[in-house]
Length: 209
Ligand code: 5GP
Image (tube, rainbow, N blue to C red; front, side):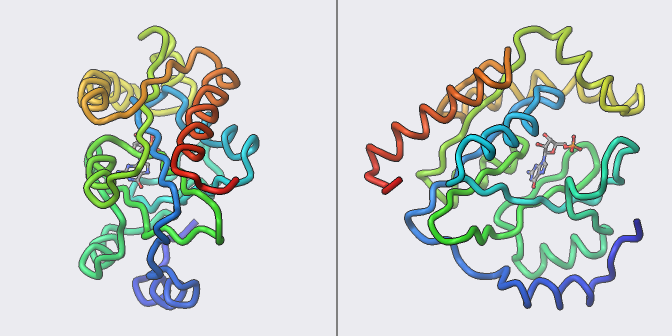
């Protein structure tokens, strides 16, 4: 799939009101954790289980994987991404293993809460922007399981080795930042644990459900 040019992207961004600001009641739910831990699967399950949640679609300069359909991200060139940074377009962005990843300023439908599935450098920026953002660190029950999941995604061997190296960094930094740590031993169980925490937070903040 060809990546769009700068002008094409901004025409679309302005049309869809991308620069609108988040309302104060919107809860920002951040999932962090090492590659292969299952953030994406948990995020999808959370959305199925709770219709109040809305998943942000990130931008990235990395190439789509053979196993991806093209909808996982908005895949852009570095030129387009740099241009977006200079327009202060991103809510947060980070360089992860040489590729850039960013969350456009979220514009969820009215009354929905935002879910971000990002790495730890970006999560720190979210925390600076929104002190009420809820950050969940997902961890794997064992390192072997993590490695198996990474291999299953069809990444190159060299890529997998680098990702495994950065696992410790993601977990250590994630623990400092996160409000809650959830072990993804089972997608269903982990998703329900997250939802029950969110429910408690909504009630304590008196956010109507
Ligand atoms: P992957 O290349 O495996 O899809 O993603 C690599 C890492 O980038 C993962 O930890 C993923 O959660 C993170 N990521 C995905 N989208 C974003 C984003 O918009 N911002 C940041 N900071 N990280 C992201």
